[in-house]
Length: 453
Image (cartoon, rainbow, N blue to C red):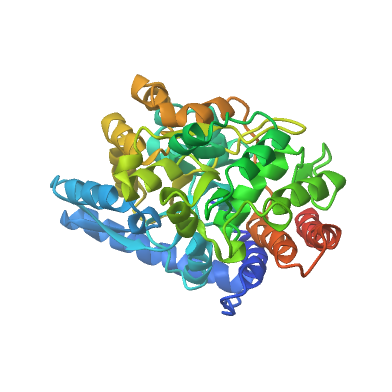
């Protein structure tokens, strides 16, 4: 169990939380290493006594769980059904779930960690694995699940939930970055799927007119917006954080590659006007609405958008296609996805029972076909029902070359670094060069904090 870095991890992520988004100005409570250690020791003793009493009495155990997908569609209804089915098994374990928005998960865990109120297990974006481990919030999964079970996860997903080769999360679903498009609109306009960024711009312009637009961008300053911007900058050759052989972190953010990517991305709205008005207010649900209604023909996104779109407008089933984000310097896909993390010492085995229940092949296949989110177990990912979905073709193609997300403490802050950059260009507050320079300064601060350890 990782405990020693809790105070450091909290300070890094608290800074990210206070910087991320202009809407909330909540001050995260402070903690000290000594206080945190004392709180954890006392909590562990109490939890151990409670668990021992429960085992001795043979009473049912209620385990607590935080989920973001429980609030989403179609994921939420599926997850609620699964929880009801699990609770009806009569195995002495009852799951209680709390829903928290995906963009607010880390803020929630910061608050809970400072008061030793973490749930028994929780969901998180696997991009936040390093921060979660640095804060001491997750147990290693091999001792809980067994190594044979851990080996059943496909390599890319497991790596996303690992730090220094040690798995701390059980990946629930993964994804791939790409662009989903309206095949019906493409056919009507007589345009072909673009292969290069220049072709992508030309297609965007050709599809813009008469109240419709070529693209909708998630321009909000949150994880959803920054994540989609990352798909683009990485194909321009940007490596956000690089760790040298000596362990020192450096950054590409603010480099010429970053400037070029930021300009290309924001030009879609600022120069070419191929996006609906109000791009900085366009969050993911709004972008899905614009796409589903035919106001936009393309959306830079992950494969999960397919489920969100077809659940909203079932008539679009069979009318969607996908292609990789056009390569500039390279073609890579951001794996993305969320995993289950188990709080150390808190009903570890019981939590694992529910997680394994959710990851059973037939259940995972049903979830993937419904949502477009990719499975994480090798046997499930290899199933023909996944590979034969035409809507996923472009995402699966993109997934052949995976971008390895850096496991740098404080990585959560990068969402706001990118968000501030593209939003300031969209609004005209900054030039591309000015925005990139500000982003570089903040990225270097993340590197400096990580290098100081």
